[in-house]
Image 1 (tube, rainbow, N blue to C red):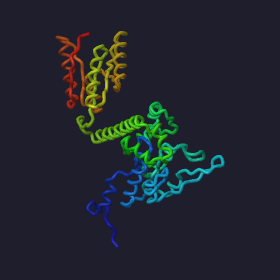
Image 2: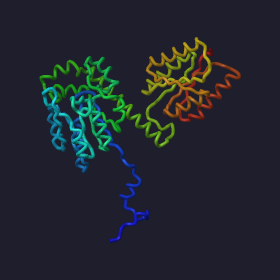
Image 3: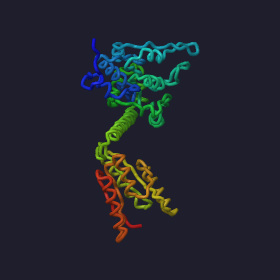
Length: 382
């Protein structure tokens, strides 16, 4: 029997070409289903996707899924293979935990891991479930996981102050940022409250107490807003990575981003206020930039600069301190790298040589950042 000549490009099969061209996958893909409260459908959505992928022939197992007694969720879970949970004795009581070693030995393509913020019982390999997920991903196994926004470490203190409910289990922000894809399981607060009253989330006997506490409409609105903001940032971060990887032009953008370039001039406060109004009207981001050129500043101007930056912080701006000998060059570089769409500069009512230098600096900026909309605001000379 003759063997195929793989040294000849024309003799290679499509599969061999794909193996050559496609980059080798070295770790699992992490997809996170994020919710803002129990009952919005995180686990249900995760299971629904898993069933669709299983029907397409993908090798998929349940590592751990908590149904919380919800019949529709339990029905979906019954359609998928499960890795039996591991029993651990702690203080004379048997507890069940996800069997990490069993999952790694089974080596499926995809594993479902519910409730990412869960703390494992003492005696487990890792203290937290998200650490188990890291081991699964390192074994080149894809993970579908769920969690609620209140369990993100940086969000938990705000949720606690808004709802009055102590958040005991958290996941570090870097773990959430590591997700390759974040899907929000969304439901309006009114629809979620209706589900609660019907007993779809907890038993009817617990519903009224929950509605009077964590599930109050104001709490749900605030939590939903936090989750939406988190997903928006994740989407924008993904777009940033794509733009940088593909080396696309600076005008390849979706969200409006307003940058205000300020100095120690007290009039910069008006520029910041104008930028804040513009960003709010456009539902965009506000960046306030100051370029340190190395020039010595008087104590009075230093205090004025600090006051300007404090005002910028008060209106919710992202404060950016740049270093460079040329203000237009340093500003243009930041604007291009961060896909700023609107730039605001102040112009003092100067004449003669200083006026020429100012317009020359503007020309330098426009040449280096041609895709940004430039706004020049006249200020009193100081």
